[in-house]
Image 1 (cartoon, one colour):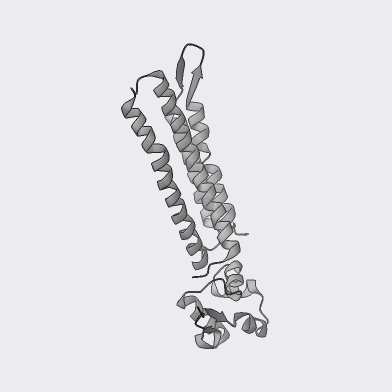
Image 2 (cartoon, rainbow over the protein chains, first blue to last red):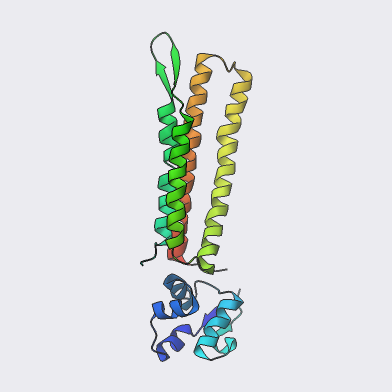
Length: 68
Length: 149
């Protein structure tokens, strides 16, 4: 399961979801789903967000194995 | 300039496909009385062409103002399209093949068969509209619920 710290970094950067969406060229709904863990982004989108917050992709996303 | 929401665009596409059933109903109808069944044909291809061109023009104009189709929206549309494809295959198997079978077994020239074919035509043109509507509804549902692989 992919966990994300996008919301944390976004709030730290004092950005709204719409502003973040505009900055990386996606819709606000996509950011909502990303933050809620209901969408796993492509590598490009993950790198775009990481670049925007000046962090690494690993800082932004953590992958945990789901227990069966 | 305010962008057009993808949902609005998809519902508009569905609404514009209503041209087909409306035109079909105008062009082909069946009149029944106690003794016979009569098919009435008022087919005007130029009118259909004009309506389709107007619909395509509206879709083209709004496409330029449509909201950015990002990767999430593309994925959601792909899923909606694949579900609609499966529905249409089922539709063909359940509606078109029996119609073909009937047309082969019965005589196509008989008035009852002509009326049956007209009814099948109606089902097909309304089916196209329903498919577009299902596509738009599925997209809205996926857009609300999210996608988890």
